[in-house]
Image (cartoon, rainbow, N blue to C red; front, top):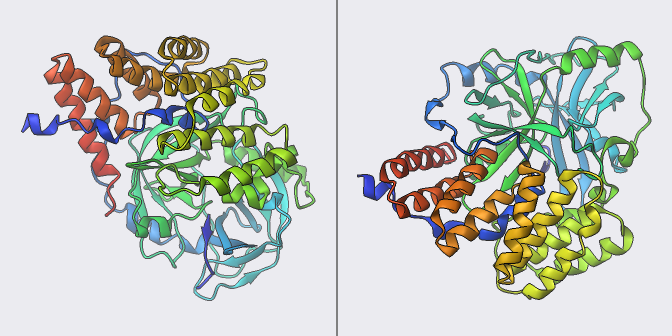
Length: 461
């Protein structure tokens, strides 16, 4: 989402960069990322991914911009803008669901040079797991075109182009590096069937940031929609870009149109898989990038206290409170004992399924590790890894074993976490260091090649 005004040598390669790694990031990533079953004996062969986009992808995508429209709403800092796209010939369109859960008035404009105003559409159907909405304008505007949605699966390694409006100086292209699931809303959504996402690679320079509108469709070489851009996940040395795949959406759209329903807006957040806290001003102010420095923790603490008072049963508020304390530790401005007590306070989140209990155990393990209680931390994290491998506890276990010089176990767990987040440069870098320590120079060189490949994919250009 944008806040804007609508305008208009082998040794050299294997040198350790382990100091770049933030040891306590696993719990934060857990709140956002998940994955499928793990085989710790294998690593992803990223070297099979093409280093450049296929010929014609950029040019093909540029011809599709007339299918876009803007969704704008007022904010404290100006106007927040998302995009959607027309689908079919009857004024149907697809966009993100969140705007329709807000009380602010939404304004719609074609993404043409005149920014032609559009009458507000009706909401025909919602797809909460994907956070998407099917809407219908009275008529498809003159000059607007439509996009088709791919019916085929999009494999890892496929290059996509993010279709952005003409106000963006250029299109963003990149390869899909992983298919994953997200468990951030397991209190609101069924954790046994979490939402699927793509993670694709691109830089995070000004040009890329300006071109990535929430809701922007990702197109394949045939010009078909394969996903919608969802959100960034800023990390110290790279930014993950997450998108929601649309495979199978066409059939569901057809079914919704046949029903002919019209939903009243604003939609009730709880009915569509959201926590109401997400739509408050305080929550928006708390969205602090993980790589940001000089954070005003006093202000963040006050905002969290206010939200805890207003939403005492909100999982997201309690998670955010824990995350802020985690960030304080990494900036040496928090008490590790307090961190442990806060983690123990999350035990009530461990309810009736493995994902929830694993989340609590990873929080507790990270806190105990920060407090120097290594054996207790190890026990909690191993239990979490056994309960729910997708939870990400392998990352902290890997770092703990590396710190103790137990290189065999460190290697084992770094391999596990890489299978969860194969695009995470820091984990590959740390595995490289461990392999060097074990004298596995050939394997370390191979891992180094993957580090440099990933660094190139995430380079702004």
